[in-house]
Length: 287
Image (tube, rainbow, N blue to C red; front, side):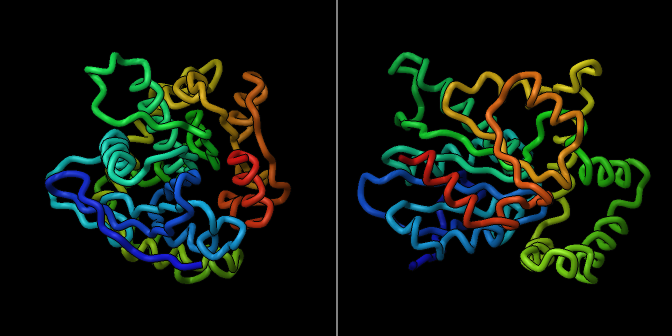
């Protein structure tokens, strides 16, 4: 299944590098959003799945990750990622859209879908983007509660104590020495993604995630992102692996009776533990 890289200008300072497959005209588009330190490499296997060949597939490298560079001092963080993705959608998406995000990408996807839904409620004269028909959201272990900010909390703590550069280099080195790849062969892409990531972008996004954690309701565990996720009108599915999800987040999902798909004995990259089943979830949302 042919895939290519295209660059899409989403601001005066940023050209998003997008792994792209052009599907059949008028078929839905699937927008894949990668996680912290990752890149479009995480979605590479889905671009070779023939069951998805009729759909347009887009997997951008967010600014500061993968092949997307960003000028220093141009801002950033979760809200900026959403702005770039809105610009990408405006430029490339003409039909139904399914948004899929992993980890940080799931958090970004929550705010992106909320932004798209809020645009639909504005008077026509105030709309800044063309209408998009949302097929839904699949959120793979994106942040919903304060307990979901794990690696990001460690990163921010190292920054506050003045040794982030050392911590980050150790994190990258450990990923190459087997922390990821030996225990999980399907995660061999992650060290390569980390090598391409801008540490400044990584740290900025970690601070954003920890800021959400610091605004967590101590009784419910819900943070701002969890509250935004609950407000989403489009069909939404939260996907997680039993080996990595915090109990607080499981309680949040159960308490709010949210639709979930559980991958038994899977870790944080549940979609790579069982890609065949995950592709089936995508197709169910696109019927």
